[in-house]
Image (cartoon, rainbow, N blue to C red; front, side, top):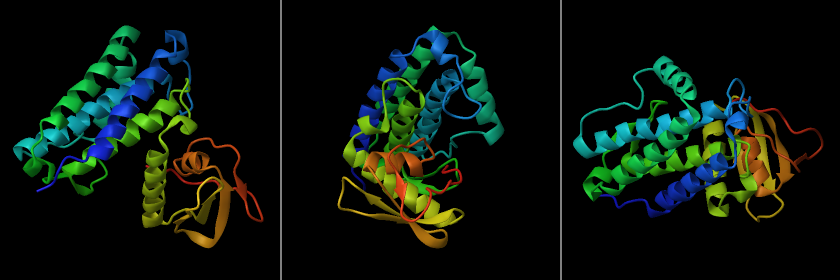
Length: 237
């Protein structure tokens, strides 16, 4: 049996609050403008995060009932749902974000130890225990709170979450190893991280939060590469 993952559930709740705070800081006109993610407005980000809550809710249903319920019927349907959602009236879009997050939180709270231990399949095809779901959601709400371009930055995210996200991004980049080899040396933390890849590792130095932003494919400041320039990275997810 598995117990509820209290740490990632706490991050999920905090990340949801940060996302809603960032959303509240933006007026409707700003939300409709092109954002920091290519091809997306802030509306697309909100529609995506709301749809993600419902998609993860499908995995919770799978864990609760044993009935296989995938996150999305297809990648094309996922993209179409985001586009459709982004066109909803602003008030409806904002309300939908909050209500979908609440539904997911309530459904997770209802899982039993046996259900937390059941395995489900992510949109990327990984088979994971249901205890992974709050981490998947934490990652979405925290990172996309920054993507909204409002009042939340990577520096505002919890330090322990930032370290866990750097663990995640370096591990994922190491699996594909389709980018440059990196050694990450935070200037405000004694730990170091490594990402496998091509060539001799480039050491990147800078604040932990900014290194994490860089590894997740977001703009970062204050980074320096030993003996050269900071490499451009392929997409993370």
